Image 1 (cartoon, rainbow, N blue to C red):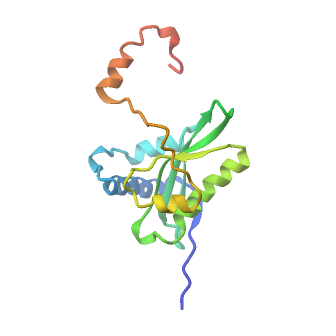
Image 2: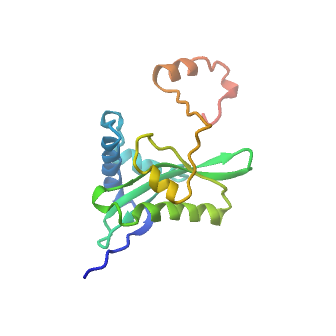
Image 3: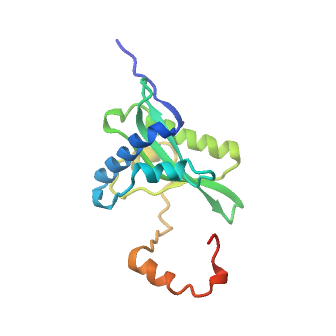
Length: 173
């Protein structure tokens, strides 16, 4: 009788980026939107390994140190709580590795970062038909039905940006 190997969680390394990008594209396929996913190895490398990164990542690896899942995240800030939190942009575990505990371990790692740093929240969005809802409920995650997400993109984003005539209000330019 063989025992299942428990995945190891560690920060993303530069050599992991091609596997993470491939999994992001797998996730887009799973979420029925592959045409919307344009992430490249260069883009993710630049985002994760810049001097002052705004994006962070962890991978779940198997016994050969091959990525089988990932979590990409960034900091948010609660003005009401007065502290940062983590926003989980994407969590994905390859189908062959589901049930290995990789997803739970990735979330536990982010929860640990929150607790150690004094962050009050770990948040994410999930597509409404994703069967992971049961898993999330089993770890105590609460669905936030009172908040409605909004998105501004494409032409609408450009039109609104065109109304920013006061250069003095821009930051980071």
